[in-house]
Image (cartoon, rainbow over the protein chains, first blue to last red):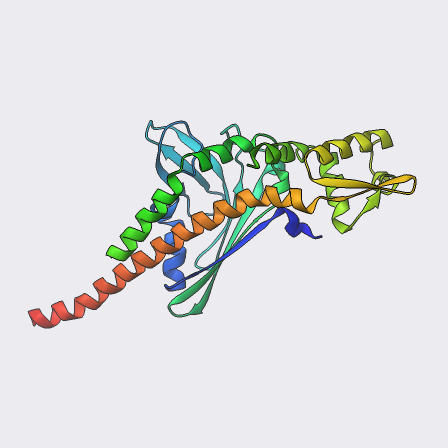
Length: 158
Length: 121
């Protein structure tokens, strides 16, 4: 067995040019990030991904509070972005980099109007306790299906 | 539901020595003595860590003559990954839909522009 045991890889093909796809992933992060993927107590108002190396990615909630998710480790438009994931199951930020996992996203232009996006979430074994809570929140909201249906509806209407 | 199981797993991997043991087993099955070799902890301590890993379904053991051999619990590890698999496939689906929707919109606007120009000229 290899290190892939504790990493997850996903590939998605997007029918749009790489510059646009990168822009949506980063600048328009809030437009697609699922509302149920949050850690704050209040409802998520805005999901933010700061577009620079060393920047933060975080949520701003309706009550004005901010919950940090991690750091931007690499920012290379339009081809690559890397994030550290510092979330703990207690819905708090864990500043210890040794306990953070890593998300690498690569954007490849397959044609002028087609982009392959490869996401690898690695070092999952670095997370400590308490993930149960985060997962429960994500899965129990039941919001997933509704959100996806909303997106599909919007996509078809456009 | 795998919720409780995965929580135990992440607890189990929160310890540095346990993580080292878990990583050592990535190459394949090993007897306890072999696992303990080179680790800065006693053999009983290694056995204790293995017990925690086993209860978290990250490793399994079997008797081989007089020794116990440990290896990764492929099924248990799959549970840990399952959550993140689901998480990202849902998030990336939403991302793809939004990227394509907004691109179609942009293209439509672009296509509409020359026609407007022609009309006004």
